[in-house]
Image (cartoon, rainbow, N blue to C red; front, side, top):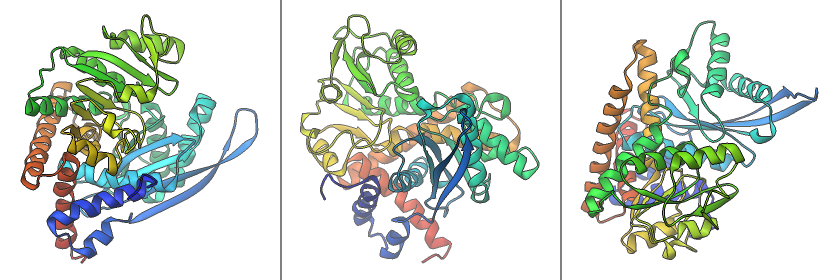
Length: 415
C-alpha cells in the first residue's frame, strides 16, 4: 500500500491485516469494513449578517453489534465523508479494546468555527443535531465533543434533542457541562487515559518518567492536559506545537505557563526563550516520549525512520500511517495506538452515559479510579497479544477488538 491512502482506506487495511491473525471470517470482514449507515444532511443557518448559509453535516454509524454507536462530532472546514467513516470505524475498535458495550459512530459539520460567532456556533449546533435526530438517541447513537466542539456545543445539542422528544434526554450526548448531566473527570479523560497507558508502556520498556523528555504535537485540550500531567509525574516538556508553529526548549517549559501564553497570543510560538522549529522537526526530536495530539497522517513512510522517541503515545486519531507503523515496529519504538492511548475520553463518556441512565453521579476520584483500572487492563491485554503474535501494539489492539465484534456478529446470527 502507498502513502496515498485516505483515512477510510487505512482503517480498512488495518482491519484486513489484523484479521489475518485470527482467521477472520471473510463475511465478517466485509461487514466491518463498511459503516452500517452514513447520513449526509444539509441544513440552513441564519448568520449574524442576516444572510442564510447552508451547511453540510455527516454522521457515520459503523457497527452496533455490541451496543449503540458512540463517537464525537467535529466542526472543521476539511471534514470529508471518508474521514468521518474512518473515524467511526476507529471508534468501534476503540470501544472494543477497552471493553465498552458500544459500537463506533462519528460526525462532522463542514464549517470553520474560527470564523463564526458564538451565536452562529449555537445555530449550527442545533441545526445539525435536529437534522440527524432520527438516528441518534441514548439507545441508538450517543455523540460527544471532538475537534472544535466542546461541552457548550454538547449542551445545545442535548437541549435541542430534548425539545424534539418533549422531555430531558441527558443520555443522548456525553461531554456535557456538569449542571446538565456531565461527568466529573470528563474534560481531562482523554489525556488522563493516555497518561495511564504511557505509565504502563514506560514500565514495560524500563523508562523512568522522572526526567523523561516529552514533545507534544498539538496543544489543544488533550495535548495541554497530557503535558501538564506528564510534568506532574516529573517529565520535562521540551517541545510543543499548534497549528501556527512549534517551539523547543532544551530546559523544558511549564505547561501551564505555555497555555497562558497561547490563550493570550493565540499560539504557542514566541514563548519566552523557546526557539522556533518546524512541525516536522518536533516529530523527529530525540525525546523519550512523543505525543501526537493533532490530526491524522503525521508520521508517514517519509519521516518514520527519523522518529527517535522511545514511546509514541497517540492522543490524536490516526496520526501514524500503516507504512510508518511497520518502520517504527522494526526500529523497536513502542507505539501506543490511538484506539488504546486516547480511549480515556470514550471510557469516561461511557461512565457519563451510565450515570445519566441511573441519575446517580460519581465523584472525580471514583471516575479516575474506574478509568485507571480499565486503561491498565486494556493495555495489559493488548501487550500480551502483541507478544503472543509478535506484532505491534496497534495490530494487537485490533486483534482483540475485532475478535470481540466478530463474536457479537456471530452470536446475533448476522453471518
